[in-house]
Image (cartoon, rainbow, N blue to C red):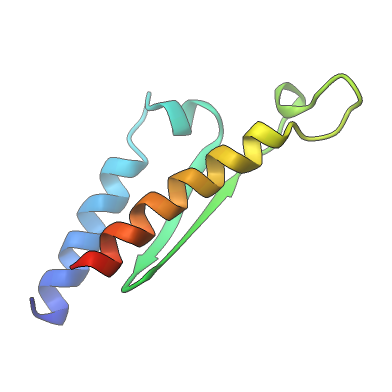
Length: 78
């Protein structure tokens, strides 16, 4: 796969990963970049992400990590 083809694939994945209405987007999670063997994401925290102690719920971090690792492994396999 050429660099241009790989970049086009990454761009397609970014669009699909961040489609409106998806689980991750609805929960404030977004894949921000994807490259050969790496992915970055972000979460926009709101009050709904907090547990009763006012701390970000651990599941938020786990979901962000799960989302990014999925695409990192896909990129590394090509």
